[in-house]
Length: 418
Ligand SMILES: Cc1ncc(COP(=O)(O)O)c(C=O)c1O
Image (cartoon, rainbow, N blue to C red; front, top):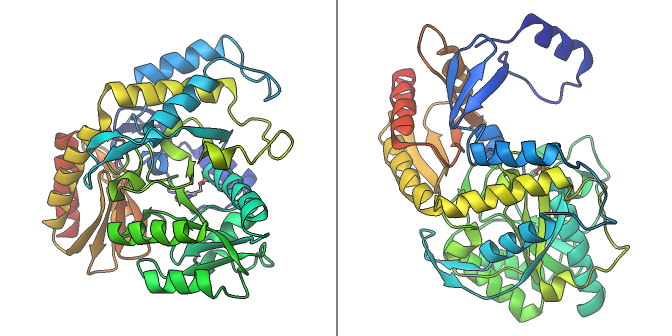
């Protein structure tokens, strides 16, 4: 584990400490391998928190970014630009896929999705809230409540914090925007009760917002039957179903989008992280009927959908499709789960595709992350791992990770757990 002294000192002196950073500085990468400032290699099982879906320095993304960098970077949303429309069309195509429960593509719903481009997941969700409230104004007599799930995570802006069903993120930052409340995930009776007898916190509800697998909360999947029941409950009441696919989207769980595994179609979907392979991009997509409720002047972003982002985004989606990434993720994900469940102290492996959580029966997850980094040196590769709390390891490798790399990581983890 190595970082230049300058990097540590400058960070200490001049950067706000909202993260407890590890003393390692990554300077380059290739696929699922990262390299630190001293030249040590690491196997990356975090991918910049699920963003570098094609791995580091993928030639298609490098070429797209370099080509665009020599042309134009920023013109604003007042003008048309290359790639923006095609990127949105590709997203629409992927959002309209149907899959089986493992994520194998089976067809298409034929639905057209329209996207507003933002720069992050939190901003994507802010756009989703505005769409939901406009829907409430037009179709539900001004209902404005947004119901989410406990243990959810939707971002760090004030409204996305309000939507996040974890009190630990709220403290010190109240008052949060009104109109949000959370119910237990996978309890359809609780959700239906909250729609029919809304709490003071939400008032009448215009939208339900869920992650199909809660990532930051600890890799907790929504049951597929629960998702179907939520879809039905929303449809019966003309309430929007918003799915936050920021972490689960673009083949992370095998399917193009994780809601497809339940055979449902949401009304609004927020995306970010992997949709441009690691270039900062987000978006909120909606079925045309909902999307068309926003008109010029209602929403905006200076940088959203800028030429660099949409060039990378288009190249990323095209490459994921050409490389048939979903099929690779389903197979690699099963391999990863099989290997993880066989490790000592692992009591359960949750998640789907290459979004997995390993529950430990000992509170050593944070220590394992440190030990993984410390392995680097003398020809041994370090590991970039991630923990949630004391006893959950979360795995979000680049989607291009190989079975051999999964084996190498699991063998090292076995040694560290012994
Ligand atoms: C499900 C989900 N939604 C929203 C966000 C916020 O995304 P960002 O950090 O890009 O604002 C995250 C980030 O981890 C997330 O996992």
